[in-house]
Length: 102
Image (cartoon, rainbow, N blue to C red; front, side):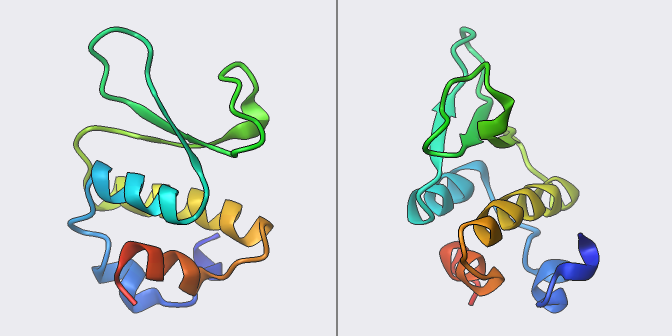
């Protein structure tokens, strides 16, 4: 999937300071469902396909957002969201725009 990244400069340098709340905003802009963990004090959040939000159905799972993110985690999250975005006929640029980096 790394070879499919078109804007390698942004992918290498632009994902350093993206936070959990930034990804939640991106999800809202791209019509992705955001589900908070139901296990007490957990701050983990799942991004899911809007049509398949049942937590026991893995077909609807896109990615998990951890409370404290770092560059490598953000790259993995980006790739997972990009796969979903492309499956919906959107482009990588749409994802960069949702992040506010383009």
